[in-house]
Image 1 (cartoon, rainbow, N blue to C red):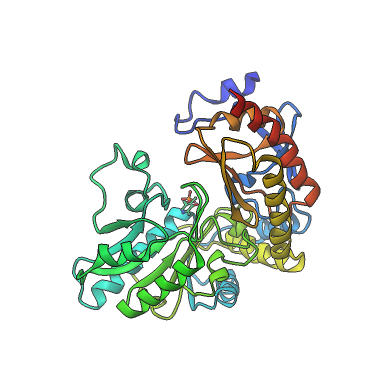
Image 2: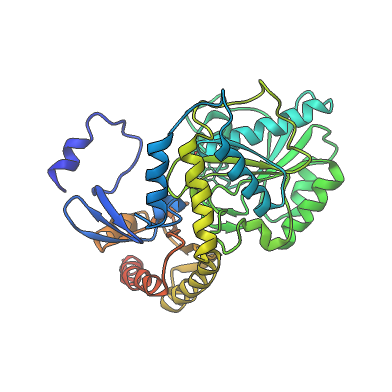
Amino acid sequence: MSAFIEAASPHVMNTYGRVPIALERGQGCRVWDVNGKEYLDALGGIAVNTLGHNHAKLVPALQEQIAKLIHTSNYYHVPGQERLAAKLVELSGMSKVFFCNSGLEANEAAIKIARKFGVDKGIANPEIVVYEKAFHGRSIATMSATGNPKIRSGFGPLVEGFIRVPLNDIDAIKQATEGNPNVVAVFFETIQGEGGINPARSEYLRDLRKLCDERDWLMMIDEVQCGMGRTGKWFAHQWAGIVPDVMPLAKGLGSGVPIGAVVAGPKAADVLQPGNHGTTFGGNPLAMRAGVETIRIMEEDGLLENAATVGAHLKASLERALGSLPGVKEIRGQGLMLGVELDRPCGALIGQAAEAGLLLSVTADSVIRIVPPLILTTAEADEIVARLTPLVKALLAQ
Ligand SMILES: *Cc1c(COP(=O)(O)O)cnc(C)c1O
């Protein structure tokens, strides 16, 4: 542990269990710490650094934007908002966008849209269906919608108006909502990220879309982590051929510049009116430029296809290296959003992997999560497997 890292901690709140390294610079899928040690980045800032580090096309565009305007406020029109919104509408097949700064803010806006959608049609106490193992953020409302009791505990009273059901069980949601006239929306991730890389099945998504239409519920899909090309389509729900009514986005949208967005379809696009919602930083010129350039570069460089093909290669390599080990329960996920579930807690792997020159994370206690930049090459994918395999074997041999 270097002296710099010890000296850095006394004045920062102790909210994270941090690995004792400090990163200084990056290039592509590699980063270097303050002592010059190199790491392969299979975490991508938690599914944020879509274009990796120091991207040759992104950096000059952001530098140019910073020299022109960083922030102005929403007192005035921000042309970048219209540019990015039009692009998100085109990619999603939806209608309108609200911009904010993070995942939880996008989800807060979605919850407000759902409630007002209900109130506007005469439902005084609207309720929203949410899921076991879901993660929607750390604010009071999004934490209340989150499934993990550990995240909620100590912060009550929670926000009311959520009904919790298990994923991939259409009968369970029908039962939980039977005869309840207050339900206004269902809210879920296509692939649960923090909950352990748990995909919603395509058949379930299509059944749920039908149910939402029959009952006039908003289908709200939190694509904060699984969206923006990570699975090989722009949005993970597109694999099921459905379109949601509300879609929060954040993590990968700005390649590292803080940004959030809520995309809404025709049923939800005009629910919020002047005075209903807002944010100081949301949609500022720097964040909008980051979003526009990220999508432009993804299109130019074929990164959706790269996420799909390199992701499939990585998943197959993980299967070959780890799939048959006793102690490895399942390898799942799609594109460059993969999880390896072990039969035991494996949080210690985060530090061990860093020591071995690999950045990754563990979610839901026992799931190794791999969410690298979408520029990952097959050679780098092989390197991830080569560095990870001996660590998993050693852990399982204990
Ligand atoms: C990370 C995440 C959030 C919260 O995003 P923040 O930017 O940390 O507030 C919400 N939903 C999902 C699915 C996430 O993965």
